[in-house]
Length: 98
Image (cartoon, rainbow, N blue to C red; front, top):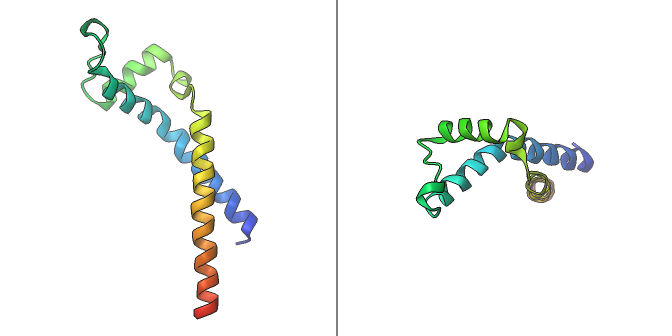
């Protein structure tokens, strides 16, 4: 693969992975912050499926991705830097040392 292809594929992987994981990340944050809320405001989730179901009712389907753009950009940048750097260094070392 060319360097440009590596960059594009790694950014695509970051985009897809982060977009899929964002509602789960939101559920994790809600789980963690639930215990610090006053008793009347707690959501009392039973499990992750319960959290996702309640979030879907409350926020609607696309609301679960609210605020995900910075997270997606961050994942794209991290993937691009780590995966491309790793494969480039690996290929150059294999070429140099067999």
